[in-house]
Amino acid sequence: MEKPMYKVAVIVDMQKDFTTGALGNKACEAVIPKIVDVIVYGGYDEVFLTRDTHDEHYLETQEGRKLPVVHTQRGEEGWQIVPAIMEAVHANCEADRIHVIDKPTFGSEELMLAIKDIAKDYKEYGELQVDFMGVCTGICVISNVLPAKMAAPEATIRVIDSACACVTPESHRTAIEAMRTCQVDIV
Image 1 (cartoon, rainbow, N blue to C red):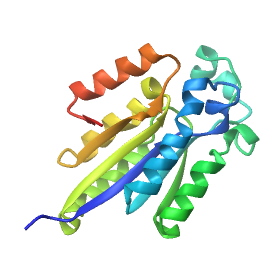
Image 2: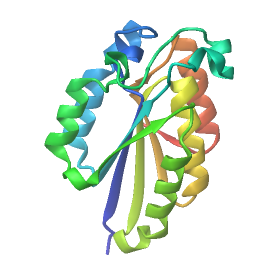
Image 3: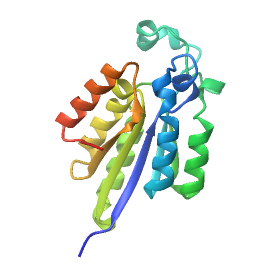
Image 4: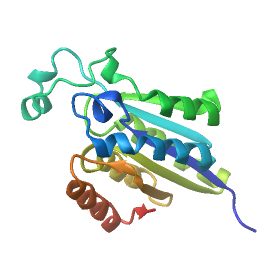
């Protein structure tokens, strides 16, 4: 008898500043409809959305000194998750199964712990599958995928290649290959 699959989607940093704003590019903007399709047709039981979140002191942080472009300031338009993605999530997932996580850095400890908690119970569900999508593949996506793999080593951790983008196609491919090497399924 086949075990049922508990499916979790993680949408990383699909905010205006990373698609059409301060740090956006055409590749990141182009994944918006792909993510919408994944959510509409994916049949997810639970959805996590991360939101890169900075305050007025961003330029004083290590990240701000290395990337001196003000972006994703809490409460500003560029901080908001792209409306089409939020609409798809709300239309296809129960409200109490939608989680938005504000994170001040590339990876989210809160997300890792949430996945770890779900993984503890995954035998109750059968199999656990966690699908990642979003931007930027070589920075924030990989920084959340690898801790998820650590937190839930027996879960199927997948990255949906066509629903991810990065600063350049080369940095996207490099990150995809690094995750593949770490036994993350690339689909």
